[in-house]
Amino acid sequence: MSNLHHPSNRLCYTVIGHAMTVLFIGLIAGIFLIFSLLDAVTLWPLPAWEVRIPGSTRGWQAAHVGGILNGVMIAVGALLMTKLQL
Image 1 (cartoon, one colour):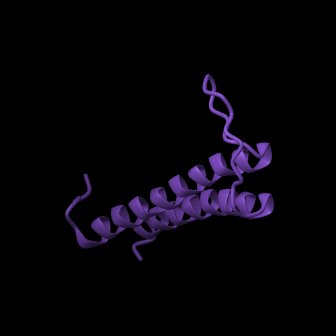
Image 2 (cartoon, helix red, strand yellow; image 1 turned 90 degrees about the vertical axis):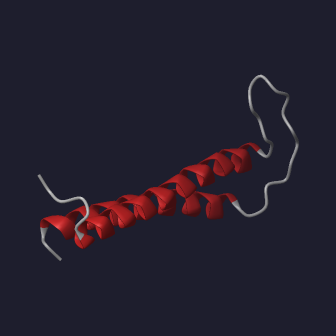
């Protein structure tokens, strides 16, 4: 069983926590991507709100995909960091 309080393990878990934060922000950007594509904030069963979402659809798509991919890449890097003893 590994020592959870070892500095390298603690660093790994900190990096994974930050990676999950980046991934969560990417998921939130996906919600705004949907609103940007619809040109309205639509949450069933509430009526649609005609709101102008700032930014372009391409920008929201880049924020969504980039956030998710970067979050996963950082988490995998943190896991490899412990396996390779870096």
